[in-house]
Length: 250
Ligand code: CA
Image 1 (cartoon, helix red, strand yellow):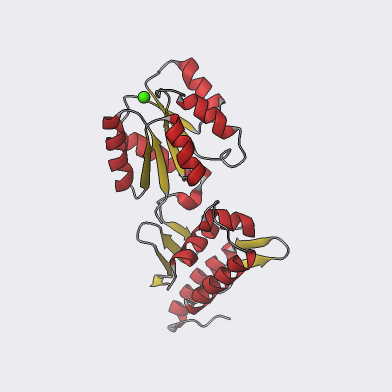
Image 2 (spheres, helix red, strand yellow):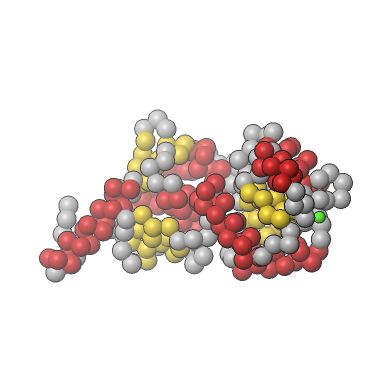
């Protein structure tokens, strides 16, 4: 389950270069050469981010941007516009229409990858490839490992993804339906009690690893990641070291 980037670009050479770099950065890549192909791809699966070329055969990237921003499902889709146009008025138009960033061709792929990471950190932190750390809990998206004070947690893929979503925005309360969209995907039929069952499995795994209390129930709303509980792990580890034993706090 690597985060998906939809690459909308009609020039094959640029598309291949970008796809190579994005895969190297830890993303899955889907390529569309026209606005119509891109719209169909997004109807099927909502990507983590879209790299959208301005000039396309048929409908333009700007047409597509406008259409996506007008629909509830795609309103918050992180989008970076790519374009050979360099005039400032064009750049302003792209940003006014709701692009999250704008990169003029020719661009450096290193800079573009940095912008992809930056837009994801800002707009979809649970899809960003960087490790997440809250208190004594650390999660590595690339290796799909989560550790409590260095010790590996035993997590299935869904539990891992659930922890990633919660940890990426600590203290934020997620409803069950928001968790379903982010963990299972927005086109998948999942029942609320499946979410509850998965949260229980995640809690069991955290507790086994010594990290109880990190996933809190918010009655009548949903779930949140508790920063204080994760910070407690660091304090407990330090107290344990100082006392020369393991655990020790209650
Ligand atoms: Ca083009």
